[in-house]
Image (cartoon, rainbow, N blue to C red; front, side, top):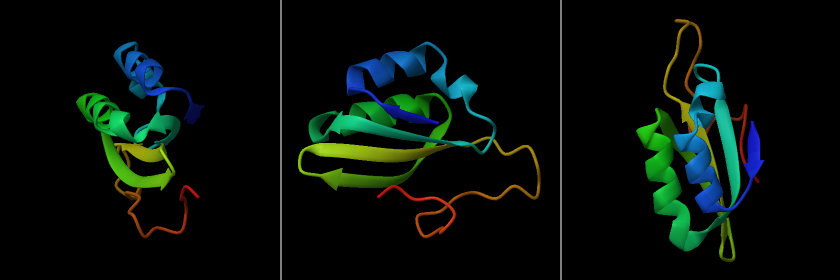
Length: 89
């Protein structure tokens, strides 16, 4: 799932159940976040069971890759910062 929305809206979406729409082990790419708002977005994501996997910055703008921390299947692996399966550019 991808969201290019300003930080206050992303935080409200987490409060409204955004993380519940992500499959166990699934990922969200969040962008449109100003550097000074990153910590608030990461905190909201973590409060709703998401884990920060990667952060990219271009100027004042930041994109985050977060992953649902639930893994239902033993064979389903976690994404790491060095995983070539997914990355934000």
